[in-house]
Length: 88
Image (cartoon, rainbow, N blue to C red; front, side):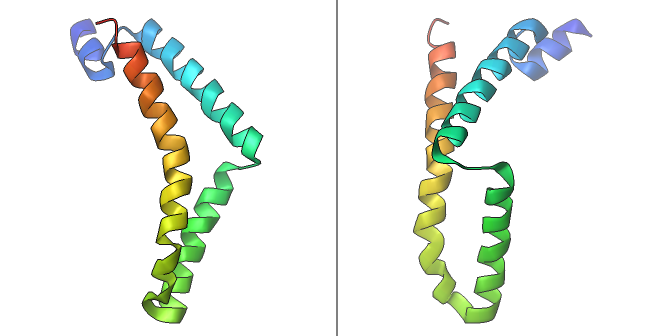
């Protein structure tokens, strides 16, 4: 059972919790620095779908904005996770 949990988490539960806490702190810092809130992303996604529905595919011009906003969270997370896995 323990081996299955470790395989699912990718590491021991303790180390996984520490990694998640560190990544959460970094993401929280970045989001606080830029004044972003989690609901801003959900509202942005909802607004994108509503705009797409109301104005057709002209709303796809916002695709780049969403790509940059998403990348601002994903890229630092990816780098941090790769740094944690670098010693292996």
